[in-house]
Length: 445
Image (cartoon, rainbow, N blue to C red; front, side, top):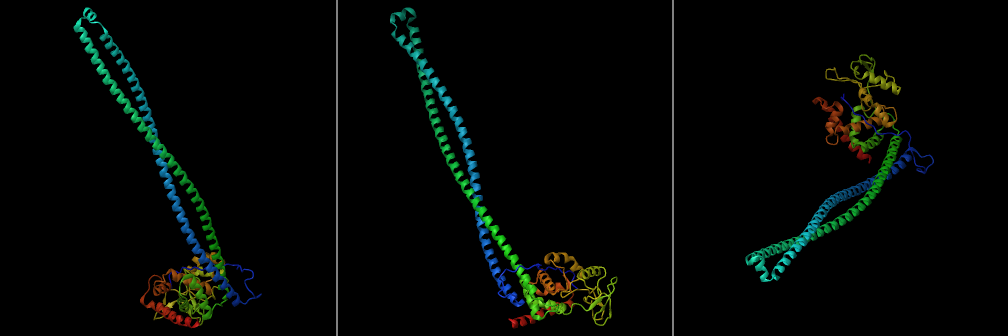
């Protein structure tokens, strides 16, 4: 038997919400109700597709707004840095201007001092020029007079040169101050422009943030509406599934309806689903040919001949789960059919039997998933339920990679990740049955 079977079933809601006025007839038949539900389901699926389209468009709009906001944030950060940088330069220029102004003031004082000294020298030169020759000869001699006059002339020349240099320095400093003032004024204007740009970007960002919030609200609204529509669609699908009302051993038409439903949920083609369940239990008609009789050893008997069988169930792995499953479902542990062990050509058992229901689940595997199934369906999980069997088979085959390689998936379903050559009869048989079912299905359409 297969080593481990993952079982998933779609949620089946306990109560079904039917829109008032959905049916024209006061007491519709199951087929009429199903037809009306299928029409409503078709409309809901169209709505869901439209929601998907709108959600995709809104998501793109969200992404565009988020990108715009990110760009504006970066621009604002860049402007903040530029403004800070410019303010630092402006502050430095202000200090340079103050230093230059101080230097100009000092230079102006030097000029005034030099002018005063120069005036005194010129006054002395003038006074010397005005002295009578006789006075000069009597008081100091002609030689001393000329020496003194030369000294005054030299001092005058030196002082004039100094005055020229100081005036040149003052002119340079004044030019430098004007240049610094212009640079400072230019930077101040630049900061004012950058501040305005920052304000504009901040305003644009606030507007984009507001739009993003509106877009996000619309996005969440669309998601909520889609989720609501999907829940309603699931409710209707569950109701349609229940309206099939198949007995434990369905007709081929009834089984095909279930297979179509499961195929929509799993992507496994209906013909392959039907073929697997045909191979396993003839679509629920043969759900086991043995009964368990000994809980300690796992021995049992053939259902028809009462012939003793060893290895009907693995005592250490499956007997306790089987007892729990049957008790919870109100079944008689000793009168609930399970699979008999496979036998080789000499009649010796090959492994254990004990698989349950149409899809032949091992009790220990089923027990691993029973709580999950109960949470999903709201009902007690039942491995003998034909609908659960179809669903579990479909989901498991999907997990096994049926869409890429049907034969490998079917063989893994039968015997796990590895198998012997002789076991390939199972996969070959399933694919052959599926091929025939494809023809039968075409004939029904």
